[in-house]
Length: 94
Image (cartoon, rainbow, N blue to C red; front, side):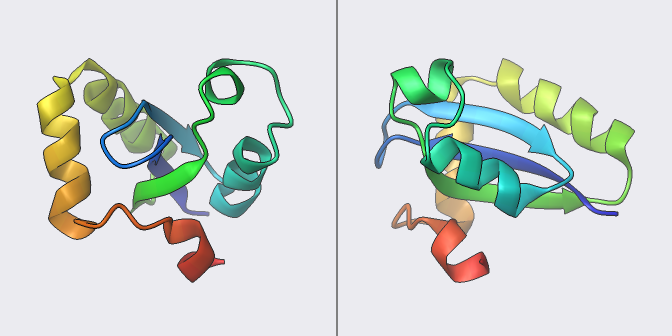
């Protein structure tokens, strides 16, 4: 089973949220529909702008924790390396 580290954004250069999940499509859908109260619902963070796949849940969790500790500029660089226009990847992937 693949595990995903993902970054959501409210808009280009907007508020960011980093998470980890084993079911990327379902998890992003929950963010998009504002199903749960919390940070992403409060700040309208629902655009999938970055994701990476891992085979090991431990590796994925470690990577998520690392990214969360990064400076904002590093996160922006990570996103823009593969997604310079900040497209919502959800539409293309699912």
